[in-house]
Length: 274
Image (cartoon, rainbow, N blue to C red; front, side, top):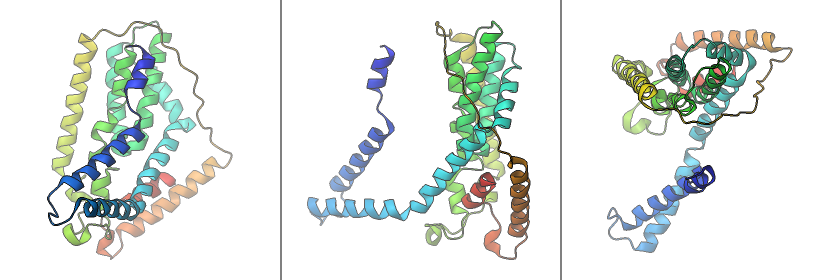
């Protein structure tokens, strides 16, 4: 199967979302949750559920968008870009490149899933280019796979949407489950142990794949990527933003209000905004 056929075979995200929507509508219609309703009544009920759910979660939707946008902006800014290129120049063989890409990507994903998503893609690319420039063999496909490992562990980190959402004092399920702080979810010893175990397993899989899977033959070509350069007020803005964050953090955690005792999505997004 050539590359063009692969693109035709795999559906784009909109098709997947549309298919899932049709599946959910169909399930509501054929389910026996409301046995006294006709098919038409169930269809209108499904439409009402969809409309109320869609607009009822707009705040959460924007929070997810901000995580991705702020994480992406941080990943492509010039200082971070220089760090990635410097890191990519260190490995002296394919194994080191694959393992370091996977490890850094997972750590970045635990920090912020949008940040880890872009960091992983950029780092995998720079690793491949750096090895090629040294005349060393590289496994571009495996490097790309390692660059997505942040998405395998991100929900156990600081941008996990579910634990951050239920830590908010006014989340939409507060009447059913109450407020669950980050100390009981992301920062719990159980979660840290599971996440660390997953990272070790994934690094082991990368090591096995690097030794037993032969890299695809063929030349890899890429277009040079230009990072975002800091503006003239970059340093001043960084100092002011960091100062604002420090003051906010001190006020937040020292507040007598018990609702301010945990990290939440808005605080994480504010950190990346600064």
